[in-house]
Amino acid sequence: MDSLPIHFFIWRYDTISELMINEQIRDKEIRLIGENGEQLGIMSAREAMKLAEEAELDLVKIAPTAKPPVCKIIDYGKYRYELARKEKEARKKQKVVEIKEIRLSPNIDSNDLNTKMNAAKKFLSKGDKVKITLRFRGREMAHMNASKHILDDFAASLGEIAVVEKAPKVEGRSISMVLAEKKIIIKEEHIMPKMKTSRAAAKRFKVTGTGKLKRNKAYKRHILTKKTTKNKRNLRKPAMTDATNVKNMKKILPYL
View 1: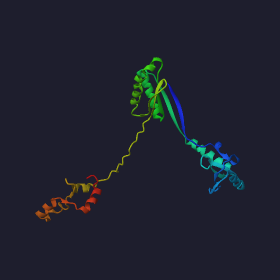
View 2 (view 1 turned 60 degrees about the vertical axis):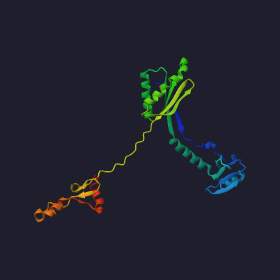
View 3 (view 1 turned 90 degrees about the vertical axis):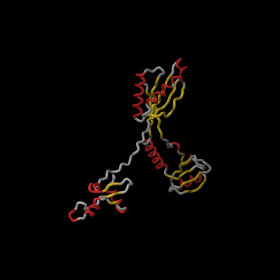
View 4 (view 1 turned 45 degrees about the vertical axis):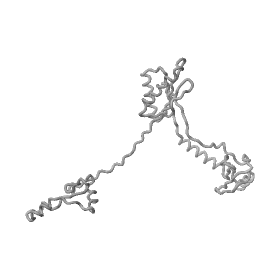
């Protein structure tokens, strides 16, 4: 299988060897910072060197591109150690982006094409990018544009898991494109915890067509022999729940 790894290291830092110290600093003017971080103003490198010697420390140019350059009076040994430690931490955090290359030919058969697609899926599932290169030889060069559909079909077949990061482009005797893993964003749905319904309340309360809450009256079956016919008839009729109690009822009847 034609697959070539390409490594990119994404990190940047200033090397210790680039630092200028003491007599190496010959600028006419520099901005000086004291050992405790205090601003000592703009002066010549010679004057700054005298102050560093009086403090028994080193003069280190920490910002050479600034105008004027910035120097600091510090212990160069300790400063060098701190820079080395930061560089080491930066290397640990460096991100390695690997690009796998898969090579195709204009006359590739369906079995080989499926094999290449499966290889691309494997690389993409690991988070790698995949460079698909369609190579031409001899007379095939005359039909480069007519064969571009092979790359388009390849990308379309992997459309569910990959996106075209770099569109097909002619590079000498080949056409190349780069595929990257498709990032699927899953939206988290806020699912309310299931609330318990009061079964006793559910038997007595109903919602009307207009959204109001009606209730069955109590005592309609309690000692009926002592109630008049009119009272019995009134007890059978539902009553509307007043607004002050609707809020409380919705808490014990959440699915009304």
